[in-house]
Amino acid sequence: MNILVTNDDGIYAEGILHLVNKLKRVATVFVIAPDREKSATGHAITIHDPLRVTKFHGFSDGVKAYHVDGTPADCVKLGVSTLLDDKPDLVISGINAGPNLGLDVLYSGTIAGAIEGVVQEVPSIAISLGGHDDFNFEKASDIVMTILLQLLETDFLSKKTVVNINIPPLNSQDIKGVKFTKLGIRKYTNFYEHRSDPRGKSYYWLAGDLMELTNTLDTDVHAVDNYYVSITPLHFDFTSHKDLERMKQSNFHL
Figure (cartoon, rainbow, N blue to C red):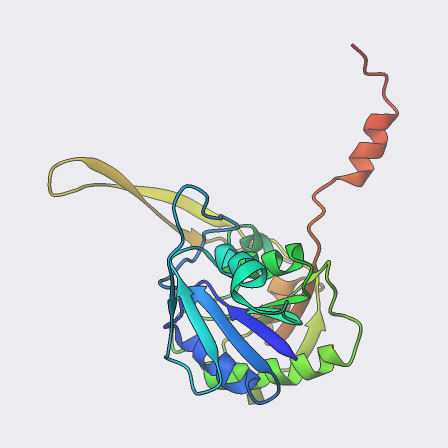
């Protein structure tokens, strides 16, 4: 099996290192990741500038790796179409430092890397580890391998669906289990702090705190908050089919 690995924390991030070290035991691993952090870049791709690709030797022998001065979506698109000799069997994006739950999936570069895999018709997985610091990526990668081997034995991996995995910020022995979930509600109190640069010109820096919201038992947010690994299938048909059918029944005309 050939696996393409990317992330949005950058190729030097600890999460991708631990993930690759585990994956190489069961697959041929290729790494194409941003040369720096690209968190919250969403599904942006680079079209007005060239992409610089550089070989990277920070992984162990047998792992072919590049870093790219673009986004996670750039990395997967470029990898599948150009850099790799053969289309990978699987794209994995992560392990991200911090969760990607609820509406975070719209902003996340981690999720975008996996989405681009599906766009390229490759089954794709996004992986995130909850918390804010002291991330235990070693144990998280063990959990990922346990789940991955089970996913490979099922028909849950699809060329049309991203499997979004979120791991609670705990040691693996403290996790209660796995739950299959839907996206929950996760919002922030947005605040743009007004500052001035050394030359007196104004700029704004986005800040804000996570809002305390109630999520139902079947959501990814509730699962992770209660020490379960959440697995959420994501499908990116944004069409509101219910509203579309209702609109078709109207008598709009020119």
